[in-house]
Image 1 (tube, rainbow, N blue to C red):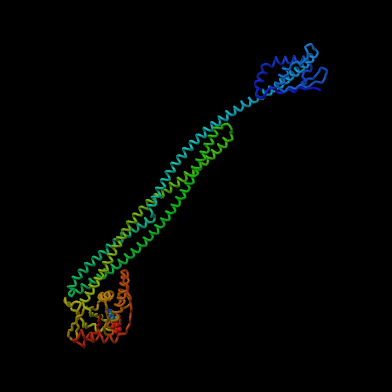
Image 2 (image 1 turned 90 degrees about the vertical axis):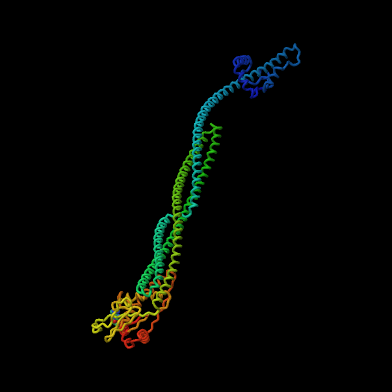
Length: 600
Ligand SMILES: Nc1ncnc2c1ncn2[C@@H]1O[C@H](COP(=O)(O)OP(=O)(O)OP(=O)(O)O)[C@@H](O)[C@H]1O
């Protein structure tokens, strides 16, 4: 049976280095000695040791380690006597075989070690090369990362600076916005249109004040006039004609004053309309202000969004800083991380740039809105000031107007009283006489002898008439005598006072007496043509005109007309009245009424 010795590792792994070192030093001589021993041995590279030379069977010796070798070296000859040389020689040969096997084991072991050493050396060289290469790569990567890190640090610093600047700008913008908002709230009624309206209102107010002044002057004049009228009353009987003219003038002034009052009322209404339009403009300005406020709210929300984006960016920067720190710590581990970081940083820069553009756009919009708001506020304040001034002026004018109206009403009352007093003084029943001119066709015969003459003395001028009959002179006196050249206007001037009395609320009656063809219809109705209008159309005109003008003072007139055919009564009454006034000549009375008519 053949025994084999398998080369084993005699040393533990941790002692491999020492073994290697030892091998490196003693390899040459040991190799030679072992070779000599091996050559002196029987079978060269065989690892098993047979029990005998001739291929006899022997136990296979296995060396598993140093202990086996030491055990072999410590092996002693077994209990045979010293003279048993043969046995001892056998034992020795056996021992030598074992030693040979041991040496062979060592040689195999050495060869294994050498092969392993070579392998390890080549591996170590490769590892060294790889290590050197890796070191170069790592140093390059480290340099790149350092450069990238420096660049990133610079960018981070610049970004931090820009963020800080943006923060400051944003704070300033927010502060300015708050200030503007407060200013805007204080200026609640800002109107562009109101300025124009207020200018117009100012102009109208000026005109109004001038007209008011005029009215006041008129009123003053009226009062003075009334005073003079009161004084004039004492001399009224003597100056009846003069007072008539004064009264007519007063009437004209009153009508002018009424017209002024109407125009003032119109002006007041127009000013109220303008005030309404100003209020509308104010509403419009409030609406515009609301729109501005909404726009500012939008801007604020956008600003808030930008702030959030900025915070996110700052957080990203912080995260990136942290990542950068980690990258610094683990620099060289991954260039891909650096690239991704670069990509992130570039994306962040792009985001930052976009946000900066957005912030700039928003800041521009905010500045524009701020300018607009400032302008609007300034205009609103100016307009408000002007509006308040105009309001005060209008209030003052309204008060003056009310007082003027009150004065006018009072003056009107006084005028009515005075007018009625004058009329009473003139006489409640008055008789006027109008002489019809000779008609060319029917009265041609009577034109030669004019039986009528008008006295020219101071006492009788305009009040007396003389009739000639059969050489006798008959004088008649009236409250007023209209000669044959008196116009319809002249007659109505006297009648208009009575019409005014009727308008003032007094009862008035005017009627005409006269023979057929004496001119009653002509006097009362007139004929076509403006100058030919009689008392009735002129009275109606005055009534309607005055009632319309007095409507502005709150007066309302209700008019009613009754028609009565009073020819019989007219003639009978005429006769009665004539008898009353001409009692001395009854016969002439009838003749007289054929040429006259009497107007009450
Ligand atoms: N003041 C006057 N000036 C010019 N024409 C006059 C005047 N008064 C009367 N006449 C003329 O005399 C004529 C008669 O007048 P009218 O018809 O008014 O008289 P009467 O009194 O009304 O008559 P009757 O009683 O018949 O109605 C008319 O043609 C009228 O134009």
